[in-house]
Image 1 (cartoon, one colour):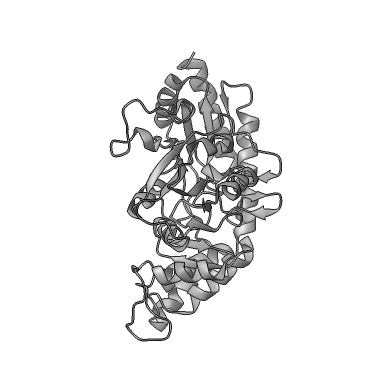
Image 2 (cartoon, helix red, strand yellow):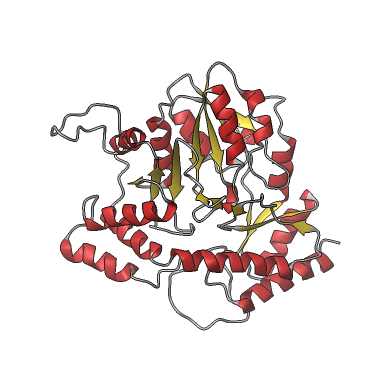
Length: 377
């Protein structure tokens, strides 16, 4: 990622997919960690960051060293065990699936909706077997799954619901933040996330017992009352005080960051109107956080030539995730999810960092229009 060094923008300067904004109190808070020697997992910033984050999403939380660890903690906290099955969309970052397998469970791959790119709630129930224990709903690219419908299926079939909110900080459904609908949720603070701690994560849960189990899992299952007495399986998944210091500074600007990201998405839609590509539909009642401004071209064969045309103009993009069921370790002969496969083959993420200027947006928009006119006819 590009260092946070102010410089005059060149007309032909490289435009990265993402870079963090570290212009607030990050530097002074980290300096305090160094000055006081509180650089590991103890220190005042961990609690302050957890409280700021909990207040923002409206749900109690406990921090983690990264988003994958947070998801593994969430699965353990709701009781996913070897032999269980967990329904998960195939179009997701591979960590969503890897964590299920790491818990000893089996992923059941679900199809997505063609227009929202989120898990199709109408197809979930057909996947349920006597061994199915949970639904892992992934809010992809800042949009939101149909959580009321997913909760309805879970309630009728006696399943837990975990929300993968790695990409959906700031996303709300009917006024409630993503991550507050299920039994547990996991967030990520990787360097390209809306709030970053470099690496980092958070687990949210309304049930105090679930949150306690998540917190125990990240601290080697240690007893809160007896030194070096470990009551359950656990690992060291704790966040450091330095990570939390950066996160707290990021949370101080979260509303302005989200406002700017939504403005970027609207700016892209205006500039790209009329081209043979489309953005995700947002369900009624959903406020999209636009972690990544993402688009799907009309024909899969247009995706890579468009990315190459932008690369030649100094503009970085990223393809969508490969559906997990197509990866070597999860592929099964004859198994296909046509919608997931087509969306993945047609999608690309556009530069989405909140510091993008209007001039840079103009340059990106012009480059995309030129590509369709010159290279993709």
